[in-house]
Image (cartoon, rainbow over all chains, first blue to last red; front, top):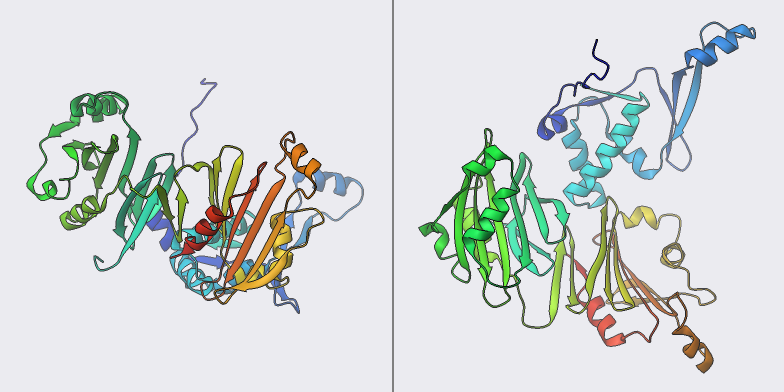
Length: 127
Length: 293
């Protein structure tokens, strides 16, 4: 048996291919618009098995799903509003760059970092 | 594509690239440039100490590459299409080939400033056309005669006296920062994008207070060339304070200028700090030539 197995790198895609992907919002989330215009996203999070087991032991419900909130700032809200399940990442970047008069590279970094964070929380999927 | 070009200037090197190419990596005397399909060009440069030899330098550079690539590096005489563009330099040409990419480049030595430059164009799927590489090579300048160094990267352009060395730089989404130093005196150039968002819930004076803190002194708001600006300075008042400032670790003379370019949605800023009185003529010169392109 090999003790130190080399980690597989997983499928890699080129930058151009990544920019052509289309982000779409998770259907399980709900959003609320504040008076300031900023968006608050409510999204479900399944409790970790360890905590779920503890809760169950103390008489809590069997399925442990919490709802978390994420409040976006003005910039996050403007990118969130652009995600419609039709526009590619490249189109989002171009729209964001045009709206805020940004350098293409700067807009790309800002938008892709934001999308990565949304993806990490399960708020969007990429297809 | 060839109709629009943009200027890049970094550590004394200046050249032009097509407007749709972008800086992808910035280092000390190193720049990598890409288009939307990937890296297209790389340039590095350094001053030469002692005698310069094309073959020795090329051997040293190729020795840094992997074995397969090292074998494929071929020195060649300067081809006719590049000869005119490289006429200001003592130049030699080279090519190399890896399993997926080909490269063609030039090693250029400037006898005036004794600087050697290596530039190479990557030829993968989309070859930069011959005309583009010729125009880029023809635009390369590695020295000036006015004692200034031009810095132009992304959307900022600044002219700084050559006595000021770049200490550090930061290019982050939304904020750029270049820190220059001459002895104990620092001049820091700032640039913020999305000014409309930054100034949505605060004015420029309040924003200035997030950039620096000058103790009891209050920032003064005004206008410059029709742009809102804020100026903020502090310096020792009494004689004994001036004497003491020399022995302090922290800078005692500080100045901050911020101005809001509403049309470009940017805020530009210059901060200077030192233990000795600041040279206002130099600061004026830097501020006048610091701009968004």
